[in-house]
Length: 175
Ligand code: SF4
Image (cartoon, rainbow, N blue to C red; front, side, top):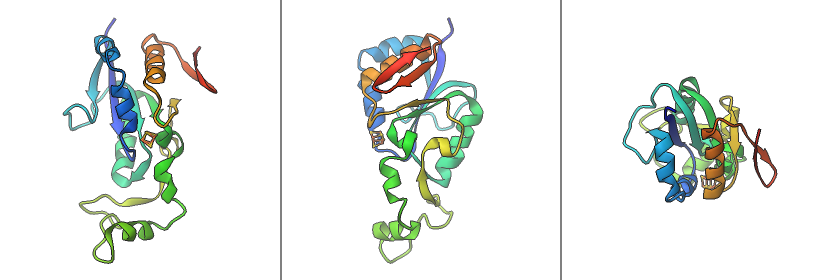
């Protein structure tokens, strides 16, 4: 059976979901026998490639660069997974949503020039941090802050076996 082309992406998140992915530990070796990691913050590949089978997307969508990347990901990927609560609901990054964008940026950068208010070297901050399903259609949701390594493994095993993982409250089942 050919290996699947797997990607992981880090948008507005704390990287905790990726740390949990690395907590797969020795299961990463089994994963590597079944999947090629074709794009990820943990590999040195600059451009999102074509024909990706599965992508795990960590983080909310917080700026225009992330929105553009997410649209590219959707166009090039068969199964898009919202990976962790920030991607699923907005979670921590969306705590800024009741505030005006300028208020948030001034609190960070002070009264001088404020990057992120307009398009420039720093991408423009979106008015709100969005869950990824608010920007593109999402195929699967893998919640948790972060999802545990056991849950990630169960989810990936189901996907790799060609099954359709579904959430059932506390855990996953496969249809
Ligand atoms: S879901 Fe939790 S662990 Fe994952 S990026 Fe968001 S805050 Fe971090």
